[in-house]
Length: 367
Ligand code: NAD
Ligand code: MG
Image (cartoon, rainbow, N blue to C red; front, side):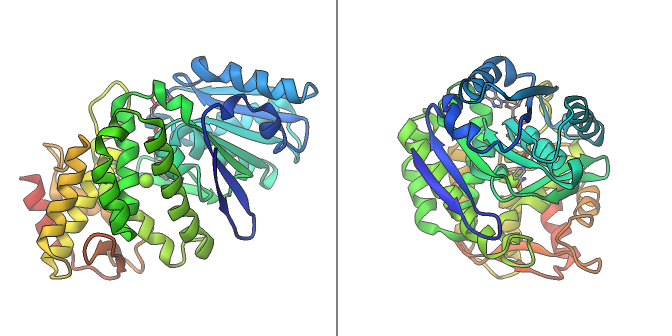
């Protein structure tokens, strides 16, 4: 097992390794009171919820465990589902020492984390991420949120988890498309701040896509360490943390404009949209004379090598995407503020980006 520590006002560990869902002692050690709400989704719960319950009750037979399941997919990350989780906490009679356990991908983690942030002004949350994306990104750092029709993640709170237990064994059942989506966020860490990691990913492409346990654990731990380092220095995103949004302003615009992804549609999921978004951010950087064109090529090559999309899906309108980007949380005083780069491993926040240049990149990308 590997452990990454996130320091700061509320320190917490990220444990990474196989079999953690069955480690009742470790799980129960994070539960202060008797009330526990397990939040999961309709794909994950049938596979893993019973294991978590059994492990917890084995260690703490006195626990009262409630359960709430959301329909799988981004379309569940809503205020309505948030209200339903809150109602489940109320039905459980959850007190202020209650614990919300999020068993699932980023959708479950973000929604359950937000409910934990709000119930009685904040109760503990333990994250049990089950997608690669949630292991390397969403379960770490304390950002929680739901989407609204106007945009992704626009309603939420900072609420760090008490612990993150990433059981890498569950990745065996994760569809390859979701593995790739997680790898997009892994590649993001290399692209934004670690050229050596970027190269390592290229060298280990086959192993990572084949589900090699050691390669995946290494990629997860290195990604979590990157995120932990940045989040420690800037927990509330006053500055440097924004770098973690490389590719996300473009990506969120695509996700919102397409309609959020769902297992039953072909819309890009979050990781895929971030892959395209990183390419657009890199292209814009080159257009602005900040970065060499060959680095865009290298990024595109690495993403495509992992089977990720690198072009904007057909049918999207550049003006509509730009309008979506204007609603991004990074913007200040109505000016577009984007994460761009000087090349591989050198991202930076650029305030007041010229909208005409963004539109030109979008026009070229939308064909
Ligand atoms: P997800 O939660 O929708 O999971 C993807 C799919 O995989 C779902 O259908 C899910 O049911 C299924 N699944 C999950 N684990 C499985 C397993 N082990 N075996 C089989 N199927 C499994 O999506 P995601 O990619 O994990 O997360 C995306 C969300 O995370 C987005 O809403 C994004 O905004 C959010 N996010 C948040 C942060 C943050 O800092 N809070 C960071 C990055 C992303
Ligand atoms: Mg992300």
